[in-house]
Image (tube, rainbow, N blue to C red; front, top):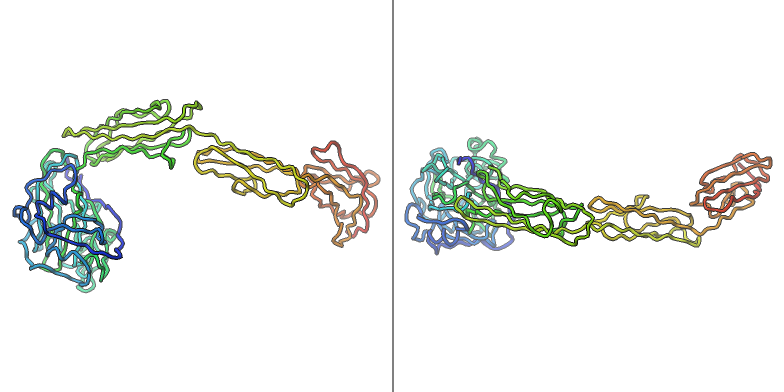
Length: 558
């Protein structure tokens, strides 16, 4: 196992300041009790607890419990370490630089001084213990806060903390070959006020940006991990603190490790800092997790339509592991849906593997079926983890689109055509051919017409139907009109012709064609035609025979 396979990852976003309430602290428990009863979560056993080198059986003012549920610290409760005493943590934040306790609580710490290039440390608060994990990783959540923010940023006085883990497979530069896992996310940079801050040097102390850049050339980008605590904030006393972060390290299950949680002032014995460790978060999970996520909101698979993804997740990412999968349920593996293997390997460096599942459309009425997956993993310590997930398979219900034809009585300029649809999957998208969306549409009522609607569902399946509108308007052809531009009777108006498929032809007395139009829409104004008697032939699709007759044009001014 390589020491490089440890990490610190961001666990939450910048937190909003709470409107009211206050962080509270208490040191009524011994360090031993704080570790066993407050910090410890599942999958870990702990022994040999000490604080500042002494047995962890004595209450100390630099270590205690906290309740952050009514504060803006981001953690509901847990264990707190402080360079002063615990009174530095609670609000209000009414001092730019606060110090508590007598100062110089503890002697210097070699590991912390290595983190800051040999600068002297004071007021150390060092909690240590041995632990044995049952899983292949160890993690816990934390927040670092300080009253050195923001005025001392990029200065030579920068409080420091570290989480030093030593044991099998780890090889770092600290005591007992320990590695430090209190790092800026996705880097090897230790967290301090000079690496995680507002992104600007301290204004009141003449902070030199090179002091920060020497620790991390990308230091200004780390402001995403920083919360500036406004002056007067009622909840937390520190001027600033980090967002909630997660420290994590790859371990070997069943082996004994040692952790040293250390915090100290640097270069002075004032301006307090604190580390908040989330209660119950110190864990070594062995459990795998099997989850099925479907494309449908109701959590089902639909044959020939929706798909799903099942994901197996493990807590660590070190070495290949084989997970056994038992495939059950009323649906048949590989016949009713995509074939699922019975052994799935999560490769070294990955903490999860995902597989798509598609339910096949077989057009057989089978009713609801289901897939039941059970994943089992046995780790090197012999501990067994089982996770089960179930997903129902339902048949696709075809869409049925119905419309009603209209037989009118030539009364309304516009009429409402409607459609109704059932079945399908997900949201349905109805669109009429003229672009109108929805199941209703207004169309002309004095014209015959056909209006088609198409409905598409989230499976990208479509149905279409056409509404036939018969206006009920009889064909009435005038025998005279006067295109004299007086605004009355200026065009050859045939009642009931609109909306029909037709041809209109006009002849003079000698049988010569003077006008012809297909799908005539009452537009002829006899332009260029003299007064006189003419003859018409009007053919209308669906009529038994053409309409014929004579037509007189009077007072033509065109």
